[in-house]
Image (cartoon, rainbow over all chains, first blue to last red; front, side):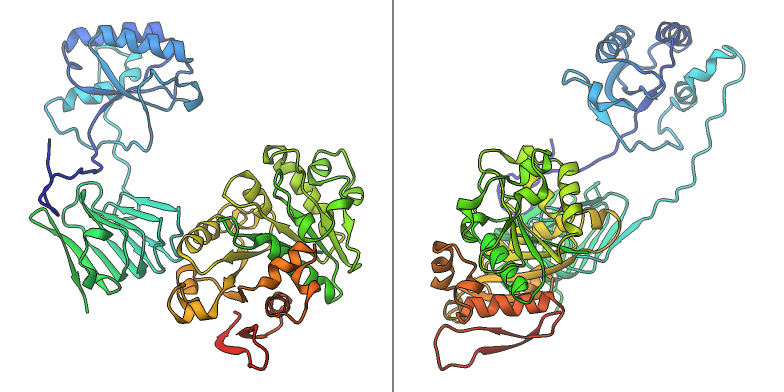
Length: 255
Length: 271
């Protein structure tokens, strides 16, 4: 467990987002036939799935809750542990099932020795055509066209939450009391920061927060946070920047 | 075609119903056809402030559900013949309102009036979101006090995202109306200043209504404050606000209760 004794000489709770690599299994109907295929494949790579987090992509298979439960149990017997679901209808999921995940991205490279086999796993349904012949080449990664910064031209109102994991957020207006902005990168506020700003939320200790007027309720970088009460009163109402230095959240006036 | 105006605030007790009645009567006094609609289903109050509580037969829910025709439910004011009231139901709750039903009632009213003024219930739930749903213009009623200002900010966020206009990518016209303003307490620093309220909400100011016993006196006799005593300080402030809604440029002032003193003039004008 990581303890963060940054702001006060007492333990505080850290909250942060992290992304992890997981393999995705996408069963094709009929499910029993697909399980047979999986067994055939597993004989060539015994123990491949042991200890790995696996996501079940149900987009191709329309299953009800009972069928999903029995499929997860059948995979469990094969040593495959399902940590999350993808592509399922949330209405059909009960509380006993793993959580539904969204926003998954294609991995261009798998970071460990299983990379060759990984291509097999991702494209498992394609094996129907030829079991022992050529593997399907892993699909080329889509060019990354997602923007890496977000510009907000109107104020962030109380009760609104803006979450942008991909990079910096620039706010031209104010962030109201009771509003929050969460960014993977830095946060720049050209109005008054009255609400919460959480920069580097995906684990970026180099992210910073800049605001033209600091009235913040809470600021946080990489999970290290400070509430209004813990801020120097001399820094209130002034242009400030916040950064992380040796796990200590520092705030300084810019004027 | 009518302009649909919602009077909203988020927080309760800030003066939405008083404002609906006062602005409605002020607009009707200028000869326009005005309907005030009580969306506070289950806690109807507007009929009392309008002095029509003994004439209610059908209500908004009856019309929404098709039990009564709009013309049967509308109550004409006894003092102003261009002012009408569509009361809320006291026995039902807000779940009886449907978006489809409200849409058809508002659509029918648009063809009959110059202004349709929707008195929103407090909160951000169904009643409040349906009251603002079809609005073209919004008055956000705010007291110069932190919780009211924050709730108003929340409501402005909803107006910019949950209304039909916002969903079509259009902008809803928004005005802040500061009510229960006490110049003496503001001078002593016991209230948030007007400038600070407007800075936080970054929305143009429609008017500043001074705290006054006239408001309570008017609602006790069942009359909009602009009708009951048009020369009183709050009535003058509401009449100015109504002129600004009509597009007139009226210098911003806070009418004073004390006679013989000129109104304290503010540099700010309605935007």
